Every structure is written in C-alpha cells, then in structure tokens.
Length: 236
Image: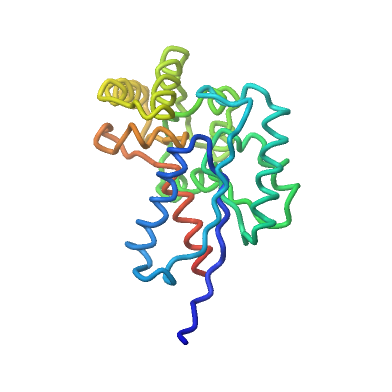
C-alpha cells in the first residue's frame, strides 16, 4: 500500500462569518493546487474546520468582548483536541484576543495580522491603507504593528467605515452587489489619494466584494497571506 505523505494538520477557526470561511478554505485548496501541485486527496494536508457560531459579534466586530473571548478560547481548544498541529483563524478582528487564545492551547496560533504585516515589509511598501471591520480599525490592530515598523497607515474615517460596515454585512448575508464594489473602490481611491502605496483587505469578508481590479495600487488579501503561510508549514 502506498504510504501517505506526512502533512501537518491545519486547524481553522471559522464561522466569522461562514461564507468568508468557505472562501478561506477554497483559497487553501486552490493554492495547494497551484503552488504544491496537489491532485490526489493524499496530496493535500489534513484540515479541521470549526465553524464557530460566535455570539456577541456582528458586522462592526466585537460587541461583547467577554462573551466573545470565552467562545474563542473554547474554539481553539476544540481544534487542539481534534489533533491540529497549528491553528489559523479566518477572521482578523478576533486577533484582538490573540493572547488569550494562544495562552489557552499548546499548539501555535499563526497570526493573520503578523503575517500580513510581514508581507507588507517583504514587499517594501512604506505606506498602506487599511480596509477592515470597525473593531479592527478602532483598536488599531493593524495600525499599531505597522507603525511600529515605520510604515505609514491610512485608516478609514467614520463615513468610509460606515460604508465598509455595510459591505461586510452584505457579504455576510450573501447579498454583495455592484454597489458594494463601487463603494469599496471609492474608499480605496480616497486612501490612495492620501498616499497609500498599497491596500490591505484586513477583514475576511472583504475579498468576496473587492478584487485587485478595483484598485490602481496593489491589494494585499490577508486571507491569501495566512493561507499561504499555513500551507508552507503544513508541507514542511
């Protein structure tokens, strides 16, 4: 019998929201095809996805931190118990509680924020615009780490954030439209006019409504960045 290759199991904490998590998993499959030549079932790494139906959380982000933290800790513990060698999270916003999650398990949780910041540095961008949930914006989840690296950050103002909230809500409901794409393109143009050399899609819902073609500067999809990193670890 042919020996199955040794692949590390990827644990994915998803459900925030479910459609974004499905897109996240599809990215993983496609990148395994294109980068690692995966064809047969045994060519892919094992993946355990926990679709967490998170309470205290909506299109703006975290609305009840204690409730959200409790569920996230339970979620990563389930992924560890299932045999995951490491964990990634199909949501940017909940990384505000990264330390609590990491402290609750013995396997590493690979941060989507840290990996995206590292990608910005690798590509040599000196300034970026951030499109994200309201919680990610107001807590400075990306801004603080990017500015610590000397990178200038342009964040959405209150009007722009309100529009991003609507786009995120529409994606969550499966109702994204050409109007959402137009609103997103306008926000991107405004941030680039302020000096952003690239745009970070810092919310896992946003790539379902926004593409590179909607921007005249490079778009960094945080989903693709963390999935790429996860596969590199799984295949190592």
